[in-house]
Length: 229
Image (cartoon, rainbow, N blue to C red; front, side, top):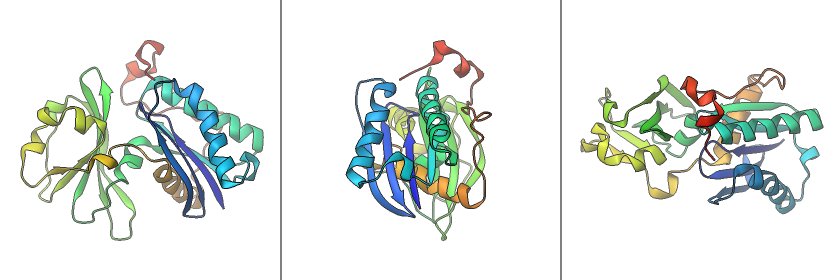
């Protein structure tokens, strides 16, 4: 089973191609261009390097949010186009959940934190079970980094560009039991998007190309003026 997945929710862009659960291709791109200029060439490159075509795919996947309004809109419109052009199914996943998969520590809570702009972060907590399945702990939120609380007795590992940008303002990061994920784990990987999408596929939790929409944690993010790259 071939899965093509991508993430356009933040400043980086990622594309991955998996055969079953084996990663054939995975790239995280740090470029200045708008995602609309980069995404389709990146998909073409993933297919070319893996010797497949878009029509060979069995499943498509992308992040639905939270994240940049413009980026999410580009990702979802591309996903809809692929679904309609090929007739193949697709799954949408949480950007914060995909980011949390960068940390697989069953002994710690994972604080997945994205830079939300306007001095805020998007934050959600997860636990990674010994079965490597991600379990959400509470609902995701948009909040001031100075208001982040740590209600956990076990260590918390924070990951994401929000944690990096506001590290000096986040109270739990001053606790010796908590820490930041390594620098090379701070960006969403489309391979993680594909892993989450496969779980949704097997549970038949798939997207309707007509009704699917980005997921926002702030209503103002639905306005074009709030869009980012």
